[in-house]
Length: 293
Image (cartoon, rainbow, N blue to C red; front, side, top):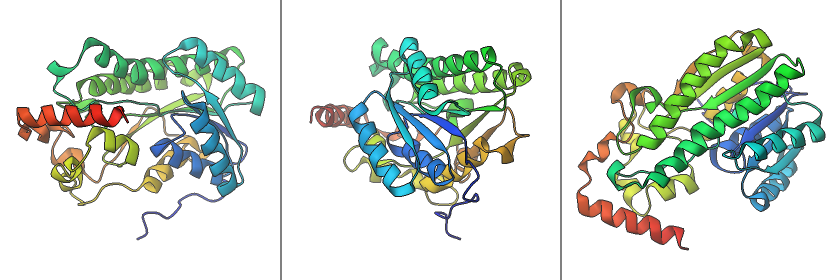
């Protein structure tokens, strides 16, 4: 079977407008591209407007769809409100919010500063809260129904994981928010679901997390019963289904797509117990050097 094959029919998202936070790179870009192919308009956000503009041109040329890039730091509620306003002014409507923006550090927790910990909590949990609250309040005030919020969590959101404690903490909060609002805001015509991906390597993020030859030393595919990592189209297929009308009776669910990884061994990064102290020093130096380029 071709895991890169596209799942839904070409018009499955026709007429819908979807906001994808962190939509300018990695998995966010892959999902955005597929949404456009299926007929949706997409608003992509991040802090880097120049990068978003380049992605807009690339994806519009490739798909024929319409993309609105909006610079937005999801940690800042005022910027999020401005993003909501810009989305409505440009497309007239927003049907789906996909909370995808995230950050992570792989590190012993005692090496993290309070600010580093806060950075991940603020992007992942506070950012998701800000976007959900801003769009949710708008939809409720305007009595707009049939809206969808899709959150990207992780398989360690329910198990926890060593060495990624800020991320595990934040993602657990996002999962609780997903399930809670699926019940509370269903009366307003909203559905809330989440996807928990296993290893779906993206060059930028994984190069920062595991620089140099560390990706080979800690090959996460070896932890997956299917003995491979995920293909971006597989995640895009699942996301497209969950934001489409085909999933109209799916609410409050978190769907795992990880090849059976978490069942094999909870805690995606627990294997890093094997890293000696001197290698953590080397890893930290490599990450700092990479950031300085």
